[in-house]
Image (cartoon, rainbow, N blue to C red; front, side):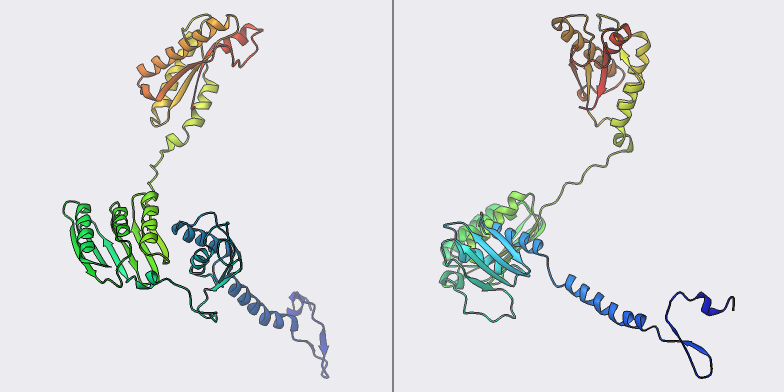
Length: 390
């Protein structure tokens, strides 16, 4: 029957006839299965996507950790979360492997090359079964946790050194780093067994942090040294990382120091379109000269005025005024004449209010014709000045 609901159905599921003669459609089994299976597939995909950091991310962070420890020339490849650290001949494979294994997200780290075992593996996943206790030196075990915190008006140093003389020396050097109005919260203590083996590295670290802005800190928890806050430049960030690596050999370094990026000045709409507007002006308004002179053709003088007005609409962009000639003279005379033409237009622009420092003038002689020199019209077109953004 026209207009009945069955006519509007788009599926082609076969109908079944009942004993009463009423036609009924079978359940849309395909759609039921799709409704059950599709969510499962989507969930599986999402789980796969969110399983952890990508190989590129792990590689970048591993190389950054190696760089922070001063380990260079090492190649790191990933298969999933498993790292292969390729160490050049003579390099310390054990240290490189330990640094990569400590990077968050890395499951295992194996090495090739270097001065240690040619192929070895460290398990970084806490759920994995360790193959044995990690090898550490007595110096690494002995170093007590420390913290250095800097604000705009204070410097707090909580650290352990090995003797009183070292404590006094470090405190004196810290006093020398304080700026006017800053106070020193001295929490240095002495412990011959747990003191920093290289206290000079601590003062080097403080010197790097002296360029910090706002709050910056360095904290060692016995395993990882975390640097946070803002420093003035990349050099200060790298210096701080090197100082930490010297102060705490074998520690994992998490260098989270940030280097502020300079805010780009806002560009006005006039400056955004300046170069295109200038090119259009030069196409539509020629600046040409009387033959053999640096005198602007009478008809071209309004073009110089229009150019000055356009240049003043954006005073942050420098321009070049280029002078040109036809080929009637010799190169010996054409080149100085073209320079005179460029200088003459520059002088007029400055007189009309354009800043002189924005303008350079250059003579090109007859080397850049825009029309054939075989006709009078062509030679007139070539006796010109062009203004452009260099």
